[in-house]
Image 1 (cartoon, rainbow, N blue to C red):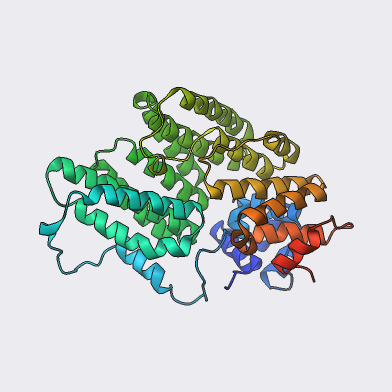
Image 2 (cartoon, rainbow, N blue to C red; image 1 turned 60 degrees about the horizontal axis):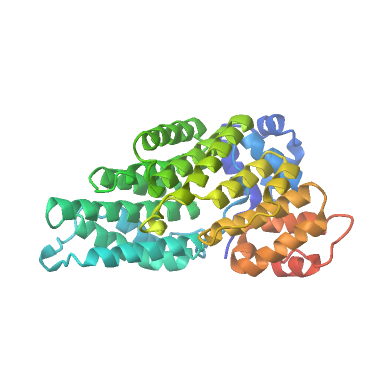
Length: 404
């Protein structure tokens, strides 16, 4: 599995930000010599403080600089057949033989919703390869159901189509295909407007805001999340579904504020979101929680930990994470991010033993995810290069291939 070199990714982000090497050096405080060596592959890694500074200078999250865990093997050539099938499902050809809807059973809709819920489970488990195998069929079935039946049945089909396309957008973001993601999400938003689900459009808006964040369009992301959150707050916060969608939008807006260096506003919004999560205990649970935004006290606290780490407040991050008890419905992807952020925080305060314990827990929970995540590799490399090597570090270094 080919992993893009840190220097290549940094160069792309630097050019996207319209910065010269000297300009990035000035904004980040990292010497132009280090930047030049990384981009020329004469240097293959950097210490965590340097990576933090480079990400800040580029105006991106650290994960955008280091990369997300790869979803499928990639040689750097043409898209693999799995991804081509996903593209075709999201953006059908201009002409294809028409499908006869005469035999469509309306009983397909409950089955399709169950398949959608399983698709979101695969996504949150980082099973991106398996998800690509099933997603084209889900999108195609949803598109068919959205076109047949009476108006009420069509609206229910549009809701399923919107949710399927939203899932395609999330998958594309994780695969680094942001333009494909926005194409999927624009179609999802259109389906939401014709659907029977009034919360689908704000949920898709949240996904679009995330895509904008990945493109460093922070103002666009923040404005969209705040606008959508205001609409949900006015009309839908009397149900658990509405509170979850509203809270998730608050977290999204807070992330954009934080990345724009307004940590105080971001933190205030996260505290508001945490209070909103308390309201969920007094409301009936969602009918199908897997098809509603991820939002709970656990998810809010996890995001607060992440923002604190990213803004070089490791002590605050560790305080927030101490004694945290995750709710049973916390997706695996959120659990893994928490452990990685806790490891980063321990590393930043010089607590190698604490970092190793968090990384060992991460290895038990998601070994495949950890092996290919460049931030996990960077943390272990940082600890390995340090003056002392905590007990357990060698096994982690061997596992990640950095014990050289």
